[in-house]
Image (cartoon, rainbow, N blue to C red; front, side, top):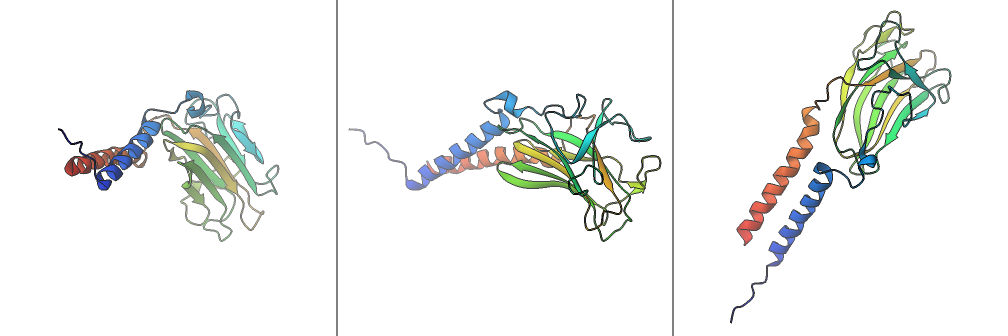
Length: 225
């Protein structure tokens, strides 16, 4: 008579962990159930604003003085001042209910008429929700960022286009410009998708961590058996 071997509690726990890691990995690496929900539509604003949701003073431009779009013929512009909420805040946001199926590299040029460095600290922020958690992807401000001349744009200084990566699994993305403490000097942000689709190493690190987790869990389960 052959006795059936019953797995120990530790073996069962490791198996559960392995299945959980597999579930997360399949959801992030193999894509969501509904591809339409994972699509990042109109990344470079070539068809205007929708499906982005605008708040305050926002729109698309073909140029801002000598500054041209890094990709295509249009880029987004959000700014403080006239049309902004309370003359201080404007934003653009987009949601991806099933989570982005792939990372996307975008660019922003932060412009200001504030003195730099300035205690008023006007700023531009990018906030993403990734796997249900808020993540601050980028902050540019008039206190710590580096600026150069923005002649011919209506603003005195600019950072130049700076890249940031929207990670795989992002469910919502908000880009916001704010005039802090003083409305005497306005600020703005030009936003476009990067001409290159290559993500930053930090974004790819998430996928590597998942594979390492899978390998480690499988090794521990094999040892227990």
